[in-house]
Each structure stands twice: as C-alpha cells, then as structure tokens.
Length: 443
Image: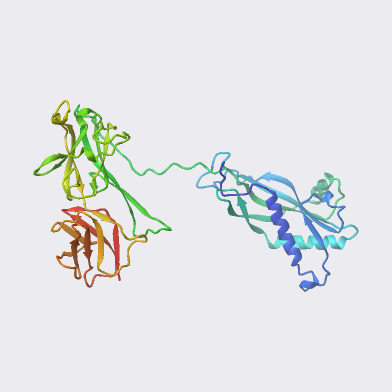
C-alpha cells in the first residue's frame, strides 16, 4: 500500500536523531581543553539502551531511553493531510515520546554530571529538531520532519516511583518530551476530479425523431501547446468545437440516433450549389475492424477522418468553408430503400503544421514561413492578433504575406513599427479560422 509523504515508520529513527545530536554536542563541547575549556576530554558512550543494561559496560555511559509513548490529544483529528481530517487509517497516528536521560560512571560522580551537563545543554539549545526521513515511496523520498524537544517537569516522588520500576538503583536523570511524532499513514485516496462540464436539458425530447436515423450535431476536441509551454513544463490547452471545425487529416465526430441501421450506413457531404457527395470512405471504424462502408458500429456517433489532400471528396478534403453532413442509404448502390436524414453543419479550415519545436513562440528572423494545407489564394487572411497582413504575389515585404507551394506554404513579414511583444498568428480561409498553433515575438 502506498504511503503518505509524512512522518516516520520507525520510532528508533527519532532516538537515533537525538543520539547523533548529543554526540555532536559532546565532541564540540566548550568544556574540553581542546575547545578552550579546562577539562581533559574523556570518553562518554551514548546509547539508547535501558539504564540497567549499560552499567556493567564500564566507563561513562550516557543513556537516552524511550520509556513511554502516548497519543497526542491535540493532533488526533487534526487535518494534517489536507483541508479536512481523514478517516482511520488515513489519519496519521500522532504520538508524544518520553525519553529518560541518565548517566552512569562507577565511583565517578563528576563524570556523570559532566556528561549530563553536555546532554542537557545540547537539548536546551535545540528545542526544535529538524531531520530528513527516507520513506519507501515510489521512488524513495527524503521527507523533511521536525519535532519539539522539551524537558518534562517531574516531581521527586514521580522520579522515585520511576526508579522503583526498574532493578537499577536511582541515579541522576531527567525526562524529555518529544512531540509531535507522526507514524506514516497510507496515502489518502485520490479525490474526485472537479466538475469541468455540466449538461442541462430542459424538456428533452426522446430520440430519434426519424425512425430511419438522424443526425444532431458535430463536435471536435482541440488540444494545442500554449505559448508558455516547454519540454520541461508542458502547458496544453483543451477546448471543444460544436459545430466542429476540422482540417485535412483531422477527425470530426458526427452525433445522431439510429445510426447503426441500414438506412443510415452512408454519410453524405453537402455544399451550397453543388450536388451531394458520399464520404462514407472517411469513416473511422469503431470498433468494427472492417473497412468502410461496413455497417456503422455505434448507434449514436460516427467518427470521420478527412483526407490529407485538398480537392474533390471523397478522395480529398473539400476546400475550406462551411459544409453539412447527413446520413442515408441508396437503392442504386444496393440498399433496400432510398433515405436521407436531416443535415447538420461543420466547417473545414486550413491546417497549420507546427514546425517549430517548443518552447513556442519562435524567435526567428523574418520572413516567417507557415506550412500546412488549404491556403487558397484570394480567400486567405493572415493576422497578427488583430493586425491584418496584406496579400502579395511576390516575396512579401513588411506587413505582407505570400502563398506558395500550391497552397501549402505562407511566407510573411510583420509590418514596420509593430509594437514589440508576442503575437498569435491567425489564418482564415473562406472565413473559417484555423486552430491556434503559432506565435511570434516582435522585438
């Protein structure tokens, strides 16, 4: 089970942290002659063992023994893991630790009291202890922890009862309280994602209106890298078009009802002033592995992918503009009946290929070059934010653009005197604007 990045799994890590702190204070004590004092340095052995277990070890023994643990009543339901308290076991167990600090040197009370002086001075100068605990997270992570260290006030009677509980005779001792120590809990469950879209229907009508199938709209999801995006810190912007705006080699979803029937197995493209064209070959099977025009697998949607080239459908995508889609059947092609559904609009835009790797925008010398599909001479507009550039039949001058490569390339230059800053490069063909994709910086 994954852990939360909080607390410790092993209480001995707290003991070891305090022992190492005492050892550092012992070695650097101003009491020693080597550090400017008047006492010859002697060996003080520091351990976390119980007092009676080290009395026969010889020399001066300083023991910091964890002898009591209690739950911290002030942190039992504290929301340390977020804005609100978590249910057990995801709420960390909060503890107060009590350590018995005592020194023993046989027949040498001076050594005992000097050892205790060093340790007590060390704890007094470090009331807040900082340490790094390595938790077995994926990957192992060093978690910064801190806790308070204070002397617990005990009466002589309390200490006498404590020593009566052990077999060792009573010695010089002090009790220290360490708080708050958290035992690492399991990672909290992932919270539900925030609501991003709400759909509301008022007096909805049961579908389909038409028994043989109908269409109700088109949609397309758009993703692009924002100008602040980089390889190290990508920033992707998402939004939906409905009615859809789609470019060559992109997909559009046609929604409807009754689309899995034989009377809705074909898709037709409509444009004002021209005959309909069947574009069933554009269907992306979901999940039917057979190529179109196999029976459409979904009753409610059809995914179409436009061809990469511009020309005459269905082999090519239509030129940029506003079109309509509908479904139906055809007796002349072997269907049982002739049927056409209602039609729903969508737009075809020119495609702009992002040839500049992130980070965007490019800092390139003018003229700039855009690559893509569907740039139609006489119908294309290029704007830098709201500043329109002028079309040119020759290599562009300042504030002009030129379409080359059979409608696959646009060369342009910003106008002179354009205020320095970042500008989005907007391309419209036949009044249909392409997806956001390019930015430039004018210096």
